[in-house]
Image (cartoon, rainbow, N blue to C red; front, side, top):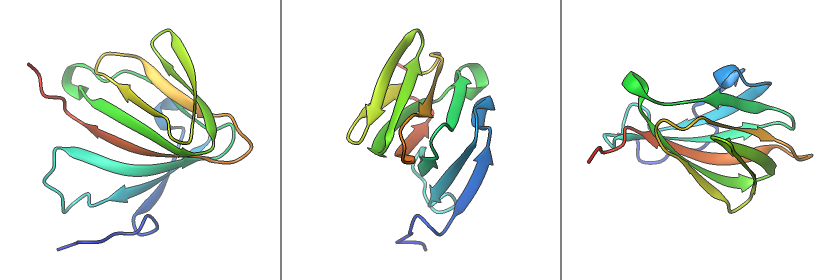
Length: 120
């Protein structure tokens, strides 16, 4: 059983995530061990890199929670655009077009948690 994991243990580089620009370095946690209904990763984007615009709906309905821990960026949700940085959190509900870009001089680092929302 995996009880502890470091962000350097299960790392992949994903180019053009959701047709964005640059490479997103993704540290994945407990992918095979957890039974929680969510996935948790730490992402790092160099200056100028982005997660492209995308929507989670239909068979791919997800809710996402972004918590920014370093760097500067801009995130769009539908028609709104907000600046993001250390200490900011953004929730992307199902069916809303969203994405973000690293805009600072240093990498943008964040924790992302996603899963299938409970429908009421």
